[in-house]
Length: 188
Image 1: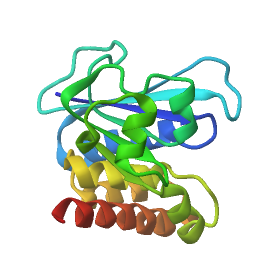
Image 2 (image 1 turned 90 degrees about the horizontal axis):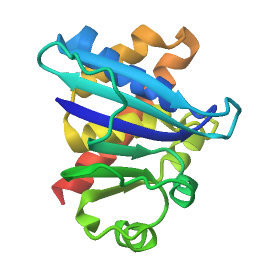
Image 3 (image 1 turned 45 degrees about the vertical axis):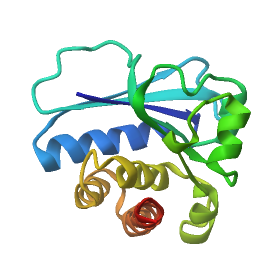
Image 4 (image 1 turned 90 degrees about the vertical axis):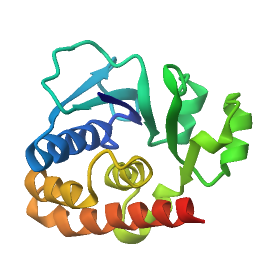
């Protein structure tokens, strides 16, 4: 089973991304999936968590995700208020929206292995392709690009399935741009 934790702020779409990944896995790839949020004060800008589980067989665990194969951070300022690497498995990966290098992020958060950190300036991509700083589908594309949890085609189908008609094409383009950027970086 693959377990993913999403760190975001209220209003920036962390749970939507968690749900899109679950839909991509379950509806379009025939896997078992769960997606669920966890938040305290429900207000815009407050730290929130989202979780996704993906497995080949039925998932019977309904607890919070404590050990992660992948942690996705939509807003780098969350590193100041949360231990974003807590529970990250030794072979897990941290995907973070930042302009900093993986080495700089590792040093800042006290993480020993920068090779397990994937950085992407998702905010810049969002502003360019979406016209606003909401990075959820971009971070989803980046995470899929680095982990291959599901195919990018399944992510695009999930976006078509879940998002409103006026949001679909721009979000698919943004997710694909992040996916391609991460794939190119991994191949270098």
